[in-house]
Image (cartoon, rainbow, N blue to C red):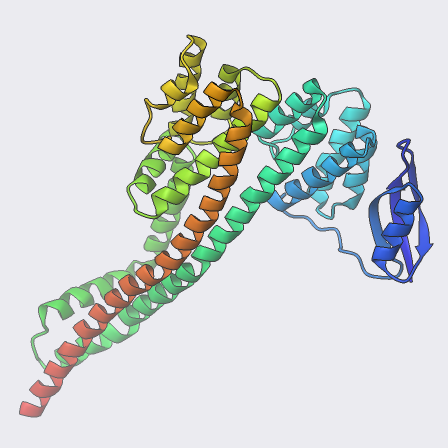
Length: 400
C-alpha cells in the first residue's frame, strides 16, 4: 500500500512524499526511522474528509492544541507548525482562523497575541500560552491546555449523554399532553354537552385550557420562543450566572457535580501557574478571570487581595466555606508548610477529576429515574382525570 505523508526533519525542514509499506503503522515507523516527525499520513486513493462550513467546536480546538503540543515539543518552528495544522483541519472556518494566525506569526507577532484576535480562544487559553512563551515552556503550556480541554470535552460529552434520554422522554410527554388536550379532551367535552350531562370540574378546567390552547397556539409559540431566548440571554449575564449557580447549588446531587467542576479548574490552573513561576496573587487573579462563574471570580479576587496583604492562601480560603471544601483548604495548608504546593495541588486535581467522573455518573443514574417517575405521575394523573369522567358519562348514558 502507498501512503502520502507530510513531516519535518530534526532541523525543522518540511518534507512530504509517498512511501510504500504493508500498513499505515509500518509507514509511520519507517518514516520515524528516517528521523522524520510525521504530522500527516493517508493512504493513496482513499477518500479523505470533505471540507465543511460549520461552527468551530471544542473538539476542533482540542485537536489543534494537542497537535500543536506535539509539533512544539518536536522543536518544529511555530509558523511551520501552525501552517501544517491549518492544512489538516477540515472545518473551513477554523482553517481561516489558523491561516490568519499563521500570517500573524510570520509577521513577527507572538502566538498569544495572534490567538487573542479570535474569540474561539478564551482569555484563560491565551494567558496560558503567553505564560508558556515568556517562561520558555510553550510545550508544557500546550500540553496542559490540551489535557484541560480534553477533560472538559469529555465532561460535556458525558453530560449531554446524561441529559439526552430525559430530554427525549420530556418531549414525548409534552407531545402526548398536547395531543390529549387538542384531540381527546374536546371530544369528551362534546359528548357531555350533546347528552346534556353536567361536566365534572376537572373536565371543565381541562376543556377550557384545551380551547385556549387551540385558539392561541401561535401566540403561545411566539411567547415561549421569546421566553427561551430571553432566558438564554439572561443566563449569559453576570446576574444570570449568579442566579443559576445559586439555584443549582440548592439541588442535591447536581450541586456536587457543579462545584467539583469549578474546583477542578481552579486546582489545575493554580498548579500550572505556580509551576510557571507566577506569584500567588497574580495566579489567583488569572484563574478568577477564566472560571466563567461570578461567584468563584469574586471569591478568588478577594483571596488575591488578602494574599497581597500577606495572608496565607489557606486562611483566605476559609472565608468561603460554601465554595472551597475542607480538602482544598487542607491541601493549601500542607503545601504552604512543606513548600510543595504545586505538587499537592496537581495531585488533588487528579482526585477531583476522578470525583467529577463519579459524580457525573451518579447524576446520570439518578436524574433519569426521577424524571421518569415525575412525568409518569403527571401523565397518570391526566389519564385518570379523563378516565373517571368517561366512566361517569357511560353510567349516566346507561341510566337513561
